[in-house]
Each structure stands twice: as C-alpha cells, then as structure tokens.
Amino acid sequence: MKTPSNINGTSKDLMSAINGDRPLKILLPSYRSNPHTGGQGIYMSLISKAIVDLGHEVDVISGPPYPHLDPRVGMIKLPSLDMYARDNPITCLNRDIMSNRIDLFEWWSHNWGGFPEPYTFGERLKNYMKTRISDYDIMHDNQTLCYGMLEVRNMGLPVVGTIHHPITKDRHIDITHAKSPFLKLLKWRWYSFLNMQIRVARQLDPLIVVSDSTKRDVHKDFGVPMERMQRIHHGI
Image (cartoon, rainbow, N blue to C red; front, top):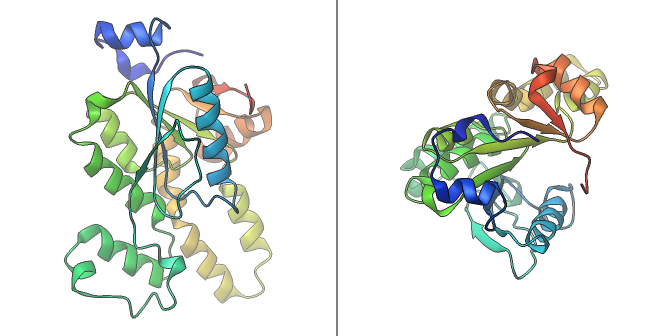
C-alpha cells in the first residue's frame, strides 16, 4: 500500500518508522466502542492487539462506551454526553452543557433526531490532539470520517481511513422499509451525518476498503475514485 500523501517533507525519524527501522506509534480513533455489541469495540480490540503483536505502539482514543483492550494497548477516554445511555436525554440539559459548544450541539442534535456522535467526537479529537501531534506517527481511522480528522491531518499527522461498507446502504434499506412518510423523514434526519462522511472520504488518500464490493459501493455512493482506494481484507 502506498504511504499517505500528506507525509512529504516528514522527519527522518518518521521515515525510519515508515521504512520499518523502528516501531510505528499509531493512534486508532473510534467515536464509540461498545465491547459487546455493534462490532466497533470488538474490531478495535482485535486490530489494536494485532498491531502490537507486530511490534508497534498503539493507543486507542474512543468515546463511550469504551472497548476492552489488550493491556499493551493504551486507552485514551474522550468523554461525550453518551446520550443513548441517559434515562431522559432531554431533561439532562444543564449549565455545563449549555456552556460547552460541542456538548450543546450534541444535546440539540440528538434530541432533534440526529446522530451527532461522529461529528462531536471529531471536534473533541481535534482539541485533544492540538498539543499531542508529535506523540504519533500516523492516525488510522475506523470509519468515523469526521471533519476533525482532516483538521488533525492539517496539524501535521498523517491520516488514513478504513471503510467497511458505506452507511448509504444502511440508509437505503432503513428508509425503504419505513412504514410511514413521517418515519422516512425521521430516518433521513438521523442519517444526515452521512453528508460529512462522504465529504471526508473524498479527501482521504489513501482510503482502505475491505473488499471489492465495498470498493465499488464507495465509488458509486461516495464518489471516491477507484484508484485512490486500497483493498486490504480483514485480518491481513
């Protein structure tokens, strides 16, 4: 696989890591990583262990719920409002939330039918990384595809992303089977984060996909050129 296009002019130390002369320091972001359901937390646990088994240094940075990781893997917790875990997400509004731009957006978007977690995670990630760019050689995203990733890249950290399948497929199935126009409208609202993911995917180079079918779907639905995607099967 080719190296990310944004590493030109990097230091000799980073190039030595890329060339295999020393272990890479890798940051793996995940906006939520439930260790038992949904797949993201399980995937983060397995891929981070596999990478440290190869001799590299790995930190996972995640919003809640947090994954269960190999003890050799660093865990950076990036708290969110975790709205799905609240008994009443509407009445949780307080001064702390109102005084924090990211928290307030998360509260508002969630309660108006959106799914803000990928975006708000990216904003928190960007803020966290402002003073920590030099701690890592590369950041490898697991389909967060948020604007904050691009800002981290602009700070100087190479970024690569993996897409397992485009969520446009989920949206199509979900809306097709909605039983009323009102439910269809609600689902369109919930999937509005896809606009961000499409824009970000188009700017990542390289972009890893896990199968030929994913490559075709990302090209068709996201408009990413075929030649900019690299197919790497799971477990390779």
